[in-house]
Length: 161
Image 1 (tube, one colour):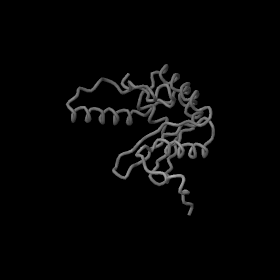
Image 2 (cartoon, helix red, strand yellow):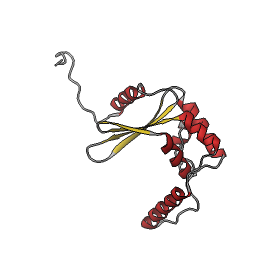
Image 3 (spheres, one colour):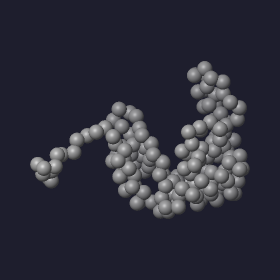
Image 4 (cartoon, one colour):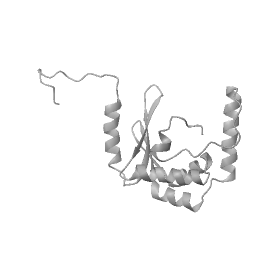
Protein backbone atom coordinates (compact mmCIF):
# COMPACT_ATOMS: atom_id res chain seq x y z
CA UNK A 1 0.00 0.00 0.00
CA UNK A 2 1.32 3.41 -0.96
CA UNK A 3 0.45 6.29 1.36
CA UNK A 4 0.66 9.91 0.33
CA UNK A 5 3.63 11.70 1.93
CA UNK A 6 2.79 14.16 4.66
CA UNK A 7 3.65 17.09 2.38
CA UNK A 8 0.93 16.02 -0.11
CA UNK A 9 -2.56 15.71 1.31
CA UNK A 10 -4.42 12.51 0.49
CA UNK A 11 -7.03 12.91 -2.24
CA UNK A 12 -10.56 13.49 -1.00
CA UNK A 13 -13.80 12.72 -2.80
CA UNK A 14 -15.34 15.72 -4.56
CA UNK A 15 -18.49 14.15 -5.95
CA UNK A 16 -17.27 15.01 -9.47
CA UNK A 17 -16.78 11.66 -11.16
CA UNK A 18 -16.24 13.16 -14.62
CA UNK A 19 -12.43 12.88 -14.65
CA UNK A 20 -12.57 9.34 -13.26
CA UNK A 21 -15.22 8.29 -15.76
CA UNK A 22 -13.22 9.84 -18.60
CA UNK A 23 -10.18 7.81 -17.56
CA UNK A 24 -12.26 4.63 -17.45
CA UNK A 25 -13.71 5.43 -20.89
CA UNK A 26 -10.20 5.90 -22.31
CA UNK A 27 -9.27 2.43 -21.03
CA UNK A 28 -12.47 0.96 -22.50
CA UNK A 29 -11.81 2.58 -25.90
CA UNK A 30 -8.42 0.86 -26.01
CA UNK A 31 -10.23 -2.49 -26.16
CA UNK A 32 -12.08 -1.79 -29.42
CA UNK A 33 -11.06 -1.43 -33.03
CA UNK A 34 -11.29 1.73 -35.11
CA UNK A 35 -14.60 3.14 -36.37
CA UNK A 36 -16.64 1.97 -33.38
CA UNK A 37 -19.31 3.86 -31.45
CA UNK A 38 -19.67 3.05 -27.76
CA UNK A 39 -22.65 3.84 -25.55
CA UNK A 40 -21.34 3.58 -21.99
CA UNK A 41 -23.54 3.65 -18.87
CA UNK A 42 -22.14 4.04 -15.37
CA UNK A 43 -24.76 2.68 -12.94
CA UNK A 44 -24.82 4.32 -9.51
CA UNK A 45 -25.67 2.55 -6.25
CA UNK A 46 -28.79 4.75 -5.93
CA UNK A 47 -30.22 3.24 -9.13
CA UNK A 48 -29.40 6.17 -11.42
CA UNK A 49 -26.91 6.13 -14.24
CA UNK A 50 -24.67 8.49 -16.15
CA UNK A 51 -24.24 7.80 -19.85
CA UNK A 52 -21.46 8.72 -22.24
CA UNK A 53 -21.06 8.54 -26.00
CA UNK A 54 -17.56 7.62 -27.16
CA UNK A 55 -15.90 6.76 -30.45
CA UNK A 56 -12.69 5.01 -31.38
CA UNK A 57 -10.43 6.42 -34.10
CA UNK A 58 -12.42 7.36 -37.20
CA UNK A 59 -15.74 6.70 -35.49
CA UNK A 60 -16.99 10.27 -35.20
CA UNK A 61 -16.86 11.18 -38.91
CA UNK A 62 -18.16 7.76 -39.93
CA UNK A 63 -21.03 8.00 -37.44
CA UNK A 64 -21.98 11.41 -38.83
CA UNK A 65 -21.82 10.01 -42.37
CA UNK A 66 -24.12 7.12 -41.39
CA UNK A 67 -26.60 9.55 -39.85
CA UNK A 68 -26.62 11.76 -42.95
CA UNK A 69 -27.32 8.72 -45.15
CA UNK A 70 -30.02 7.43 -42.78
CA UNK A 71 -31.81 10.79 -42.57
CA UNK A 72 -31.64 11.23 -46.36
CA UNK A 73 -33.38 7.84 -46.68
CA UNK A 74 -35.99 8.80 -44.03
CA UNK A 75 -34.96 6.00 -41.69
CA UNK A 76 -36.59 6.22 -38.27
CA UNK A 77 -36.20 5.00 -34.69
CA UNK A 78 -37.44 1.48 -35.54
CA UNK A 79 -34.79 1.21 -38.24
CA UNK A 80 -32.13 2.56 -35.86
CA UNK A 81 -33.06 -0.05 -33.24
CA UNK A 82 -33.15 -2.89 -35.76
CA UNK A 83 -29.88 -2.05 -37.51
CA UNK A 84 -28.12 -1.33 -34.22
CA UNK A 85 -29.29 -4.64 -32.73
CA UNK A 86 -27.96 -6.53 -35.73
CA UNK A 87 -24.41 -5.39 -34.99
CA UNK A 88 -24.10 -4.43 -31.31
CA UNK A 89 -22.36 -6.31 -28.56
CA UNK A 90 -22.97 -5.64 -24.88
CA UNK A 91 -20.37 -6.22 -22.18
CA UNK A 92 -20.13 -5.23 -18.55
CA UNK A 93 -17.37 -4.14 -16.20
CA UNK A 94 -18.93 -4.20 -12.76
CA UNK A 95 -21.49 -1.40 -12.78
CA UNK A 96 -20.46 -0.22 -16.24
CA UNK A 97 -22.49 -1.35 -19.27
CA UNK A 98 -20.76 -1.02 -22.64
CA UNK A 99 -22.68 -1.30 -25.88
CA UNK A 100 -20.34 -1.35 -28.89
CA UNK A 101 -21.42 -0.70 -32.47
CA UNK A 102 -18.95 -1.37 -35.30
CA UNK A 103 -19.88 1.37 -37.74
CA UNK A 104 -18.85 -0.09 -41.13
CA UNK A 105 -21.52 -2.86 -41.06
CA UNK A 106 -24.10 -0.28 -39.94
CA UNK A 107 -23.22 1.95 -42.89
CA UNK A 108 -23.58 -1.07 -45.20
CA UNK A 109 -27.07 -1.79 -43.81
CA UNK A 110 -28.15 1.85 -44.17
CA UNK A 111 -26.84 2.02 -47.73
CA UNK A 112 -28.51 -1.34 -48.55
CA UNK A 113 -31.89 0.00 -47.37
CA UNK A 114 -32.31 -2.35 -44.38
CA UNK A 115 -35.46 -1.42 -42.47
CA UNK A 116 -36.93 -2.51 -39.16
CA UNK A 117 -39.61 -5.22 -39.43
CA UNK A 118 -43.28 -4.23 -39.32
CA UNK A 119 -43.77 -6.04 -35.98
CA UNK A 120 -41.06 -3.97 -34.32
CA UNK A 121 -42.43 -0.80 -35.87
CA UNK A 122 -45.93 -1.59 -34.52
CA UNK A 123 -44.54 -2.44 -31.08
CA UNK A 124 -42.63 0.84 -30.88
CA UNK A 125 -45.78 2.72 -31.89
CA UNK A 126 -47.72 0.98 -29.07
CA UNK A 127 -45.04 1.92 -26.53
CA UNK A 128 -45.16 5.56 -27.63
CA UNK A 129 -48.98 5.61 -27.52
CA UNK A 130 -49.01 4.06 -24.04
CA UNK A 131 -46.44 6.55 -22.73
CA UNK A 132 -48.44 9.43 -24.20
CA UNK A 133 -51.66 8.18 -22.61
CA UNK A 134 -50.01 7.79 -19.21
CA UNK A 135 -48.59 11.31 -19.30
CA UNK A 136 -51.67 12.97 -20.79
CA UNK A 137 -49.92 13.91 -24.02
CA UNK A 138 -51.08 13.60 -27.59
CA UNK A 139 -48.72 11.35 -29.53
CA UNK A 140 -47.28 12.63 -32.80
CA UNK A 141 -48.06 10.60 -35.89
CA UNK A 142 -45.41 8.23 -37.19
CA UNK A 143 -42.26 7.25 -35.38
CA UNK A 144 -39.40 9.38 -34.05
CA UNK A 145 -36.52 10.03 -36.42
CA UNK A 146 -33.29 8.05 -36.64
CA UNK A 147 -31.53 8.52 -33.29
CA UNK A 148 -27.95 8.54 -34.52
CA UNK A 149 -24.49 7.02 -34.26
CA UNK A 150 -22.44 10.19 -34.81
CA UNK A 151 -21.74 13.13 -32.52
CA UNK A 152 -23.54 15.74 -34.63
CA UNK A 153 -26.90 14.01 -34.14
CA UNK A 154 -26.34 12.42 -30.73
CA UNK A 155 -25.14 15.68 -29.15
CA UNK A 156 -28.03 17.78 -30.46
CA UNK A 157 -30.08 19.40 -27.74
CA UNK A 158 -33.34 19.05 -29.69
CA UNK A 159 -34.02 15.33 -30.11
CA UNK A 160 -37.62 15.70 -31.28
CA UNK A 161 -37.22 16.47 -34.97
